[in-house]
Every structure is written in structure tokens, then in C-alpha cells.
Length: 370
Image (tube, rainbow, N blue to C red):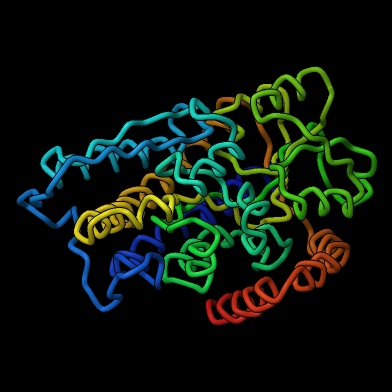
């Protein structure tokens, strides 16, 4: 297939992201039981639909942290949340933003949310698996079809509400929203035609046991690096590629050293907008509802559209300006990778009863999306 043809197909896959905007707009602001003493039948007031600020008794401060900087969707989402909720509360709720790990590393911020020291974070789902093992369901290779729609389907399913929400509340997190992320692709210094091309290659991915195990099963060597060191790792040859999404490549400058965009294994990356359950449980009902409804409105009515456009702009720039080449995997390669990572499915299900139940739920939900 020519580069022009590959770009056309890639644009078609990214264009599918816009479907989510229509799918999630009408979702309930509060899906599932997440906090104590909340009547799930209540209809939360949408901050984007409210023309007059709500009267909030008292003053509240929300500190939000992310590990990313720049135009990453985590950052623009929390900026929009700050704007909307401060306006909706007439200044009674103040949001302080801490990008680029100013509140600590991703694991440290997650621990801070669990114990109530930090009010909220926007962090990739893979980082939550140590605190909430069932979150790793999103890291299972080939759980979603490898057709370029994984990120879209993941965000749609998660935003509709699943048993993960109740599970996460028990682990100390309240779901504000699931951001539309990108698909799991491999950016490398070499073209991947078969799994043999990955043999012995040093690859980086997020600190997820399942993602790293998948790289090992593909024949690569998973290398642990801080995200801030990945670019230099590619430059000096410490690693030869990464498994992540195109927006991470661009914001981290990875395309300066790696030019091969391999459209495999095509799983989903999800960024989570979570609040501290301990903190949320201290809030009056009207404040809690405003926080959650505003967060969900921002994700569903702002971030999805932003990410759709940003992903397209990013991949266009990576190809047209940075000189990257897109390589579409053969069906043989995808089947080879799928077969190699099949044991991970059983491994996850055998983690505990929660993981087994959530796995079965997601398999059914994904099947229904076909």
C-alpha cells in the first residue's frame, strides 16, 4: 500500500473518533454509584447548560495534578474544568492546576488521591493498576478489535458506566470522566513486518505489568524509564521504540529519533479524570453533584472533540513535518501477536474475582459494539 493510501486509512480511523461526540453527549452526568449517600435517581445540573451560577455555601479548593505538560488532553481538560466550575459556582469553588508532576510522580499522585491529600488527578489508566488491579483490563492486548477503533470504543463503553465505577469507589476513587485517548501503536526506529523484527529490541511503554509482559511476548525487551527520559533513550539507543499513542510521541519529541509508525497492536489508551473518594464524601450534595456533572460535561462535550482534532493534527504533523512513515500491519502479523499474548487474558482473569467479572463484562460490552 502506498504512503498516500496508508495516510488515507489512518485518517479514516482517526475520523471515527468524532462518532464518540454524538454517542456520549446524552449520557447521564452521574453514572453508577460512586459516592456515599447520593440518590442515583437525581439528575445532576449540567454546568454547561446553566446560565446562572449556582449558589454554593462555603468555599472549596480543588487541586488537580497531571504528569504531562503542553497541549496534552489531560492538561487542556483540567484547564477547561477550572474555567467551567469556577464560573458555575460563582467563584465558590477554586481549582488549582499542577501539570508536569508538580504534585509528585504519577504513582505518588494516585496515592495522594486515595488518602485524600490530593483532590483529583488526570492520569493514564495503566498507572492505576497497582492501586486497583481491575483497571488493567484496559491494558489487555487484543481485548478490543485491532481495527483502529479501540480508543473510541473504550471511551464510549466507559462513559456509559460500567461496574468499574463502583469498584474504583471501593479503592478510593470517584470517576469524574474517562478521556478519549489514542490507540496503542508502536513508534520505532525500524519497520515491523513480523514478530521476528521485535526480537531483542528494547522497547518502552507505560508502567503496566500487562503492557510490559505483552512486549516480552512479542519478543522485545521491556525497558523501564521515566517518561521524561524516553526521548533521550531513543536518541542514545537505550531503546529502539515505544508502545504508546501519537500524542505522547509528539509532546515528548520522540519523532525526532524514531520515524516508523507501526499500526499495531492497536489497543486502547485511556486517560482517567478521578477524584478522591475520601474528599468527595465530605462535600455537601450540591457541591459533589456540581463537581461530577462539570467534569463529565467537560470530558464529553469538550475533550472528545479536542482529542479528535488534536490527534489528526498530530499525525499529520508527524508525517508531513517530522518525516515519519506509517506502516500498516498484515493480518498475519496481527494474528501472530494476538496468539502470543493470549495467555495474558487468562492471567488477568485469575487475578481475583473482581478482575474475572470485569473481564467478562467488557468482553460482552465490546462484542455488543460490533
